Amino acid sequence: MKKIIFFLFLFLPCVSGLAVTPTSLDFGEISRGETVVRELLIINNENFPVEFEIEGFYDNSFILFESESNLVNVELKIIDKEDGDYEDFLVVKENYGSNLVNAVSIKVKYRVEGGDYSNVDLNLENVKVKGYGFSILYGIALVGLLGVGSFGYVRKRKFKKNEEL
Image 1 (cartoon, rainbow, N blue to C red):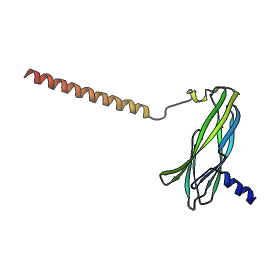
Image 2: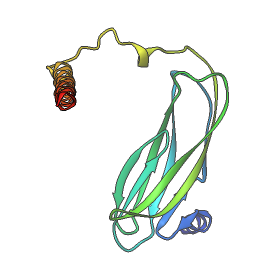
Image 3: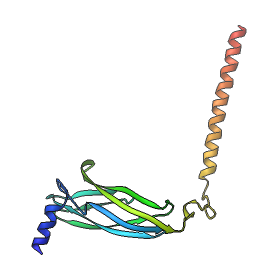
Image 4: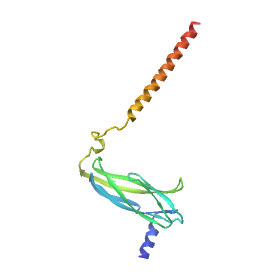
């Protein structure tokens, strides 16, 4: 077991305290509407806690303490892409406080084939506006337009008065 762990650490892409494996994710063939999960191991090699962020089609953030690791389940769900091969990237960032220190890019490959197109994201039948937020925005816009209009009217009257003198 120690030899396997040692072997993994030799081949992990390691930037300062950030170690990530695997270096690429292959989700294989995915049908529209299907969710596929792959695992990504992130290890903190520093002697202090570090905040990690994952960005791309999958977003996550967490803190790892010294020598701690996190096995992240990266989910990919295709809704409305054409059939074909696709490549994407996930970026694993190592942050100290509010400063980005290191980042590792993970190449992601998948093939879309089959499944039904979905209009779930475009279905607005059951959407209801709660409260008065929309009406208040119209009111604010109307008051603003009245203010601009009245300012212009007053300026025009003053200009005409000055011309008459």
